Image 1: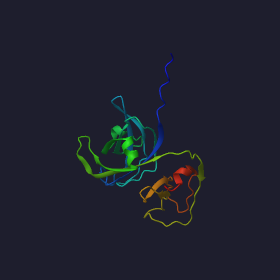
Image 2: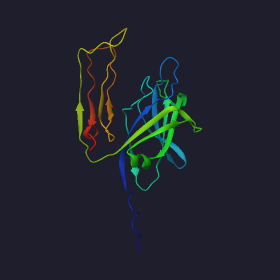
Image 3: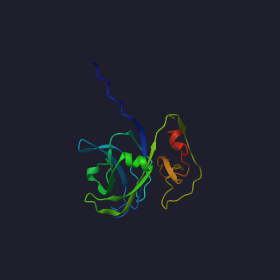
Image 4: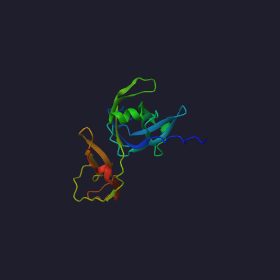
Length: 210
């Protein structure tokens, strides 16, 4: 008698957004340039799943780059979120200053929707007053995208020895009723009349939580 095929694992895709507050400052003449690396435990080892962009001189970063993971309902998926101060163009984490980390499961994040934890050092001491907030959103079937393009003229001059270096940030209302950043454009150096590169963004990302 032929055995039945194994049951298909129930899973969904989950998008994670990351922000931090009160990170350690590792730079002498400016502020830390943080990046967050996300790692998944498999077979007793940590494997990097992705990382955010680096943000210059900011101890309270809101990262624009998100991470999409497969969430398996019946599995314990252990994650590590590690913050580093990047000091080289190659973004080599081995050469970076460590700013703190947390470990938790993906299921724990999904069940909370929004999870805020205090960052810790590898020996479990507090990483100063630093905290990390992770927002989880299960992705639906809306795959429609919009291509947006923006420009501006006559912006205010904010730099002493040159023109402004403008960029745009886009926010929407999150599940906690607070504004949540969903996209950041590139910086354009030394101009008051910028034209940013067109970018593609999913309509799901722009929709308000309901």
